Amino acid sequence: MVTLAQSAVPKMARITFMKKRDDLRETLTPRFCMIITTGMILAGLGIPVLILIQLLPASLLLCGAGFALVAFGGIMWLIFYGDL
Image (tube, rainbow, N blue to C red):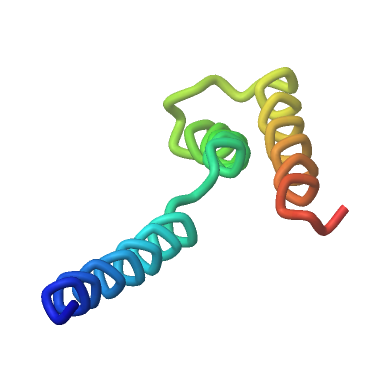
């Protein structure tokens, strides 16, 4: 009986530790949809910056694409985050 009690205690502590570790990993790992929407926002902000430093030609189409990426990525970010 004593052997059973001694072997059961470390197992319970290990289960508790593993559960806390898994919960921590889930809270620190961003969801894939949040990574995609953040990438869309950064890409939309990057297009005007590239136009500003003259690596891309200044055109209404590129400016509109940058605005659309930021707007769509921002709305999707809010939806996935749960605010909308």
